[in-house]
Image (tube, rainbow, N blue to C red; front, side, top):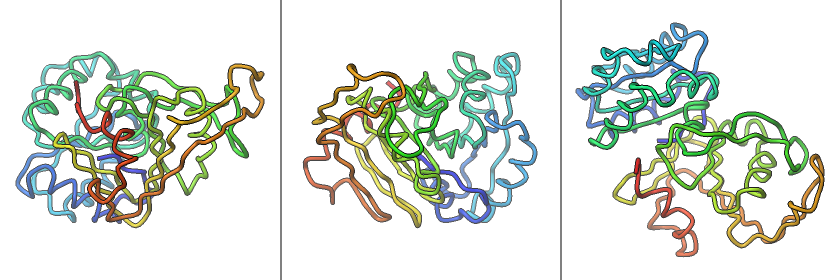
Length: 268
């Protein structure tokens, strides 16, 4: 589940309720990982009642603020028992610096391979992919070199995810990344909205906003020939908007090749 983030997580019961369903229902154990945040206890204080309102009866916090903490076998053991792992917002660079390549990271991968559901919101959403946005802005137009990209947690292949998408006007940021990486599916998710992907090849959009897909597979660009900071030529870039209720089976066949690598395999 890729969630676009929100400033009031207690209001996101529709999205969190769907996550609880994906985990197997109210009795399923869910772990909320707050490693992306500098104020993990405050974040947990918001999500604890939010998950309770969504029906979850077994929900606990796991925090790893350093690589030493992320190497604790006890934390990995708690994740091994979870049927759902939800990664909160904060800073995706902080998240990957703290847990990337650690036993906790491997425990997440093992849990997902064993059938646990994985969700991320805001920074937690950005970090789900093999690639993630690290920093930068492209406020008025796509701009060569304006946005950084680094390694994410490696749970979703062939995509780059941006969040708070419509609310923070991030279309040009995603276009900038796709200009340099046209083989990736650009996924922009609005606040209070989620894109749900399953290993069985299903897709759905949940929440009041939309998911924007930037498709550069047919693009022609002169990005290699312009200087850093300049606006590249971008022809035949395709933008698709998926509102709530959208499912893969309702989409035209032209979108299937773009989304299929993202859908499977989940966690190679």
